[in-house]
Image 1 (cartoon, rainbow, N blue to C red):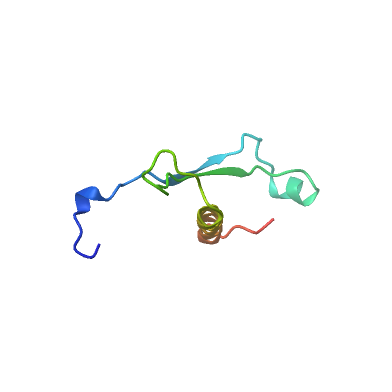
Image 2: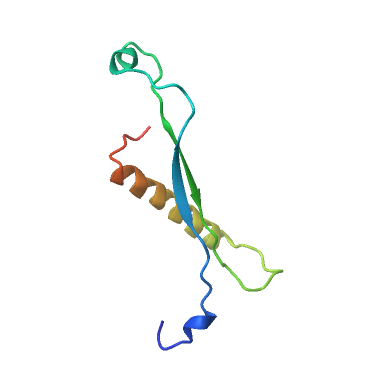
Length: 86
């Protein structure tokens, strides 16, 4: 923080949740026969302060940074859970 006042740094909530997708689970044999297996839905949420000015507009670099953050986070969640890429 380079000696700055920590009370001036905004803490914005971020996180993710993993929930069942609602489909009934299929057995391993049913999955092998082509029946869809139950899966999960991942919801990722970030609140990011890009500018403290309410009238400011996002520039392309900010959008690219946010896209990269979301993509990297999802990939890290998938890697942690040993999920295959689709």
